[in-house]
Structure formats: structure tokens, C-alpha cells
Image (cartoon, rainbow, N blue to C red; front, side, top):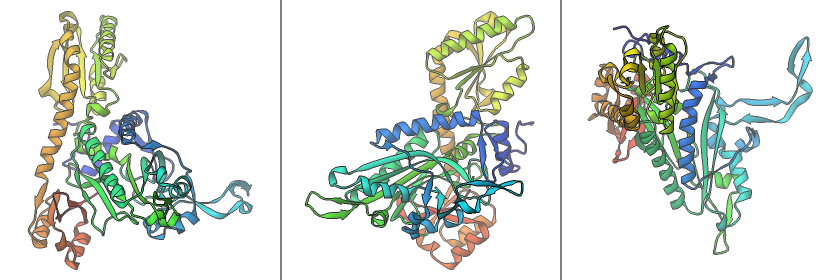
Length: 478
């Protein structure tokens, strides 16, 4: 069968993904190495994702703030263990002025900074410095902050929405009086992310704690959400960190307790990014393009008049009227009255993943009906119903699509998770090209034999099994 995206997922998943981004008009590579330009349709998806995440974060008692893009290098030197993980990815600002030299604009040698700045790869250090001033007493705790910003980590192998040198994210940073409160909060935000990905992105997450080998530098505990892509690889979609007192001691975050004693606080950090968009696209999309859950679809319904020259005005008017009725019910609608051919319009919106496609032609206009197709199911879902019935049922149709997409992903996940008894069985399955997550006793991965398998098959420990932390999930990853 001819498909809109070639090669197909089965033929070359990586190339399919890159072509999907182009076909759905989501983003393009930027002239800045390793960066991308997110186009309006892609940004509209991010805005819907961001706004719902922001609502949930605020409901958890967190306040938004904004901290500087440039961080003094001295701040990083205070937390060497943490910074070691970012040192090779850090972009450094060394001059503050350009000058015309030999006919070319170049950094002015006389403007060299006495102390370089780092373009933020993450903000624990600069936020920690602010917290040391904002927290004085137990009455100032807990302090819960979040910011929506862009960050930079110099990426050697960029891939749009998965690994780019610059990306957008939210990063939360909280301070507590006790370790018990901090760890409970780190787990709370971990659950918040998992619920969000289930409810909003229709993606089931493998939730668990990172092993000591994989945890965030400077953290006592890192809790992760791992998603399984259609090719069986893992994608880390969000993390929440119990940072212990590492940053509190490095930056002097202390408070005067009710007992009159000065003591160091306990901190957490947690974040998700535009990487979630890559997960969203790879989990749900097919060989004809994007497939979007209604919660994050810029247009939940597209109305397409299929017009001939003699009935264009009447069909466009009917399409506009239907769009207005749906909008009154809170549905995001695109009415496509452009002069493109009907088939071209349909393929445009199929590739962009609009959940419900509605066609109005001469026959529908005469009968007072519309022809409706679900994007997630395709032709088998095509039905013709009255306009009034569609307006009344469209909201429920969208809720059903949202639920069905989650169930489809969850059912696929079940087939991609398997237990292995030992490293020999794991190697056998990997050598056969089997894909997905492999569940194995964690202590069996603490040896040179597992290290050799990691190198040969490019696998890694993703997270411990929340149901039984004696086991760990192992998989290839993005």
C-alpha cells in the first residue's frame, strides 16, 4: 500500500521519524548547529502541552519565576560533582562585545570577560544561590519554584525534538526542612508527570528509580519515566531528583529552625522538556503521518468542504456554520475553505494528525449530514451522520479517541516487556534482534559481562522496577 511517509516505520524507523517531522510541518533544522526552529503547528502542540503541565504544577503549590540565562562559572565550581555531567556540553560566553576586525565582526579582544559565563544547561546552581538568600527561617519553607525556559547542552548527534543543543523545558526546584519532606515531594512530582503523560499525552510510562550508575549527578535519588517507542527503544520523558543536602551545603541554603538552631535545608529538582514531543510523535504516529491525542491537538476537528465550482459558496458556508457550532462546545476547529483539491486537503490534515476529519460534499449538504473519520483508526471508522448528531457527539468522540489511543499504546507496551532469567538469555534475545524492555535481576548487571553487552548492543539500565526494585529494566534508548 502507498503511504504518505516513506520509508515506513518497519523499513527504517529513524528515517521515518525525520520525514514525519517534515510532513507534519512541525519543525526544521536551524542555521545554528544542533538547533531546530519549531514551526507554528509544532509550537501550538507545545503550548497545549505546556499550559496543561503548568496548571498541574501550580495546583501542586509551586510558583513560577524566571532566572538568568547566563550563570557565573564560579557557581558551577561550587558543585563539582553535579557539573561534571555537563562539562563536555557547556557553551561558554567569554566576550561581551563585537568589533570590526579586517572587515569581519569578531569578538573584541579588549572585551574579554574576567570570569566566563555558562549558558544554562540547568539551573540548580543559580537558583540555589537565590534560595540561600530567600530562605532564612523554617517559616520560609517549603519554597517551591518552577521556570519555563530554554537551555543549552552542546549536542554532538542532534535529532529534532529528541536531542538538540537548545531546547525548551520546565525545571522545578523545591526546598524543604527535612529529608522526608523532600523525598516525598520528589516522588509526588514523579507521579504528577506520570499522570500527566497518561491523561494528556495518552502514553503509559514505565516509572521507577534510576540505578546508582544512571542517576542524576549530585542526586541521592532520581525517579524517571521511561516511554517505549514503536521500535522498542526507550526514551526518558521526565525525571524528578531528591538532591539531599548537596546543593544546600554548596550554596549555603540554611534556615533557623523552631528550636533556634541553624541547619541546612533539603532540596529537589524535577523537569520535562520538548523531548516529550518526540515521544508523543513516535509512540502514536503511523506511516501516513502524525496521530495526535485530542488533548494536545491544535485542531481537534478539521471540516473540509468537498466543492465543485458551482457549489463552493454554499459548501463553504455550511462548513463555517458547523465550525461555529463546534466551537461553542469548546472544540478546537479548523475549517479548510482553501481552494486546494479536496484530496490534497484531506492528506494535509491526515499528515498533521487532526483527530476527527469531517467532509461535507454536495450529497451531505442536501441530506443535512457529514462524513466523519477518526485519524487513529482511519477508513474503518468512516461514518455518515446527521449534523445535529455530530455536534452533540463530537466531544464524546474525542474523549473516546483519547482513551483508545492510551489503550492501544498500553497494549503494545505489554508485548514489548519481557523478563529474562540471566545474562545468557538476555544476550540470546538481543542477538536475535528482539526489541523492547528486558526485566532482569539488578545484581546480575553489576559485572563486566553486562558491561560488554552494553557496549555490543548499545543497551543501558533504564530504571528499577517500582513493583520490585530487585529487578531493573534494560533497553536500547534514544
